Amino acid sequence: MSLEPLTPHDKILRTYTEPEVSALLRELHERGKPFGIQWGSAMVNGATIDGRLLINFGDTSVATLLNLLALLRETGRPA
Image: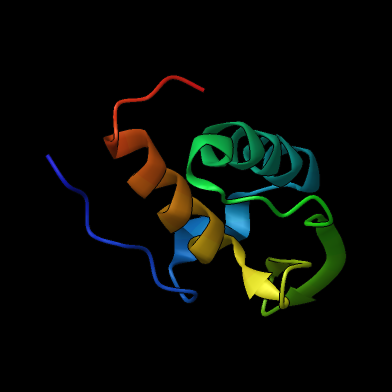
């Protein structure tokens, strides 16, 4: 079952805290290793746009992080 991708303007994104996003980044690092997806410098940068946290890998939104994780989770490989 595939979920619809999040957009940077989804209201749910305003509920994520910096510690939660940091945990998601750790998961991305673990799940992404087998695929060569490695952003060792990716971190929450403390900036927000309209209440949404930004992540330092091109100042992307949490939506991008969650969409990447959803794709990696669908592969069925454990973290």
